[in-house]
Image 1 (cartoon, rainbow, N blue to C red):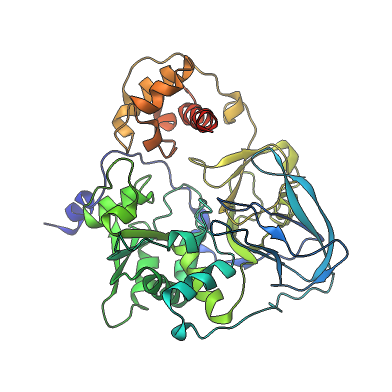
Image 2 (cartoon, helix red, strand yellow; image 1 turned 90 degrees about the vertical axis):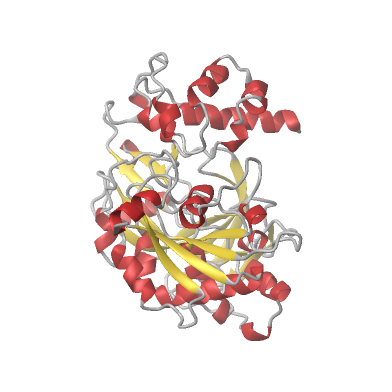
Length: 447
């Protein structure tokens, strides 16, 4: 078997091949300066919002915990800069509802140095203590899911884990933040992988990277430990290769059964950005105060990947990146396939923002200006759905508000909203948005 034929077979069924548009992949990560004010929502993760530890008028330093975790499925928040707490109040969020947030007025002379840390002897920590240290860091899934990292690594003893899969695919168009982290911080990534392996008891780790990032694969291979417990595997460039179940299939040729999680087949999947940051923060005893964000799109004057302090207003980021008319643009957080369009530039960068994409608002390019046509039963959505669902039927049921049938008969719960069906639909039916809305209705009905 040739190398190319191996790559073709080493993947999952179906999927799509959107244009990569990763022009920022060749430029080093730059650092964005502090905004004069930062807004830190207490709910930046899946689970219970954090609880404030500070009051209005209190001075804080960069790295200081300013909100504590409220239970197991929660993480703390750390001050991204030196400053004074201006208010704790409701502020707009990217998803629409106003949420309780800490407003920080940043001192003009605030340093980039982390001034609050609690170093630990990581080698002396038990797995349970290591998980607590991960929670204390405030780390969540930086690929966009924002599930608390310590909770994802807290695997029941009834499900022993043999493999940690490290997701370096970054299959969304435009996004290159993970690519740059793999190139520039491979040693930190290896530290994070080792820590995650200890936490879950895995005997091996496999880094999956798409074949359009061979330079990243080479950079990581140069840092691999000699014991062979960590390996790098190249997989075909295809969307959504980075989805958990797709990557498990590609790397292990194992399918996660419907309704089950990766741990049910002995696997935990983590994003390279998450593990790279863990490898930086945990040895120093620091909390998450910033993340790498891809700022790109046809409306960007200075595209690139930036270290952005968490809490930085979107308007500030876009002004720094050369978008003087941001209010007239279409802004998407994340990638174009699964990202979220935002109506206000007053929302901040949060832990789950991997990308800020700026598009021309012309009607033919704007999602809001695309006309929808009736389904023609072409079957294209069925052909590309990576989960083997029938998006056409689900769409028709959604149109008739038959949400219970969508879940009970046509497995709506297996849809992870990758957007493949909407991408190929010649009738421009917003299938993914319909499915997202239907899930929300079913969750509310379930109480």
